[in-house]
Amino acid sequence: MPMIRTIRRAVSRVIHRKIDLSHPARSPLGSSVVNCVTYVDGVRRFGPPSAGDALRGVRAAGRGFVWLGLHEPSNDELLSLAGEFGLHPLAVEAAGHGRQRPRTEEYDGVLLSVFKTCLYVEHERLTETSEVVDTGELVVLTGPDFVITVRHGGHGSLGPLREALEADPVRLARGPAAVLHAVADQVVDDYLRVADAIQLDVEAVETSVFAGRPQREDAGRIYQLKRELTEFKRAVLPLDRPLHVLATRRSACVDDGVRPYFPDVAEHLTRTTEQIAGYDALLDSVFQAHLAQVTVAQNEDMRRITAWAAIIAVPTMVCGVYGMNFAHMPELRWTYGYPAALGLMAVACFVIHRGFRRNGWL
Image 1 (cartoon, rainbow, N blue to C red):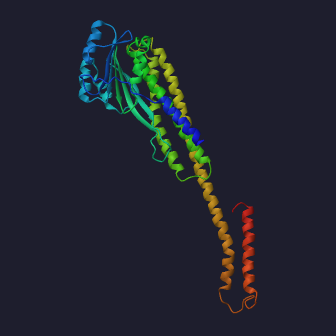
Image 2: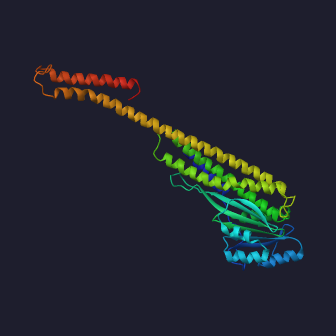
Image 3: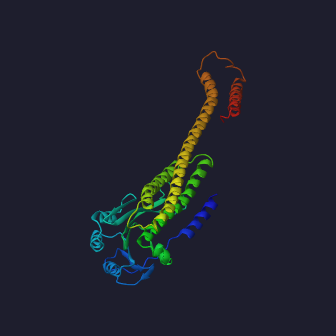
């Protein structure tokens, strides 16, 4: 089993390894700008490096949209963008906050969507201090002719997603809503990958608990895994309502051509939440089983201690009686009194020991 789990982890790392393919260029807006690209009919167009110039060019042409990617921008950078893109102050505040629940709101015709990103932290063996899930945040501001993605955290890169969308111009030609759907789909797919990886840790803990005598560190490992699972749950469960809103509520930012695709994302999210609920219930059962095993082991130890105490009590009693130095005691002056007493103690101890062995106490 350990070898199989190691192989499965290695294969998972190879298949799901993320490569940041984001454009290395930085726009004049600041170092937080990962990429600023104009798309017309789903095709990338090279134009002004400034986000404001790109947006004005799109609006002057009356077609296409601008995709601006940011990573942990400062307040000053967000305020400058607010003026260029006409963003509501609440949307700007949400984009720069970095610690929010998943949600979706509309401010002055701009749709704000907040997602929690998750990454499974690889480890050779789960310990009492192992980090299993690392979370970040991704904010998507979707307008009629622009989409702004703001990423917080060291993972969740949108470089591979941008490359995939650019390889499918028909999909990208649907506009900013197609980018929003692709981001939501990638976030939820990452949830599924994290959930599948956590399953290996749950199986490892379960195998360890039921492999034999309970180990002292098992309780700490189970508790740590439940803590990490709780953090994962906080990222996943609140996203159900926002996805439902995107799939059902009409919005100028999400047209009817893209809206039917969101229920599929919601279905994948439901699968993830069901997996989390199953893991949580299983860990509760494993923890209860571990406690039961500890109780049984303690009872067995107490029975052994009690049995040996009963065996030792016989020679202790005999020696105590003969050690009182009375003048008139049975067999006190008999030549074979000493070996007879030893033999009596040995026979009594042997009989009691056999009785305890027969009853399973020893």
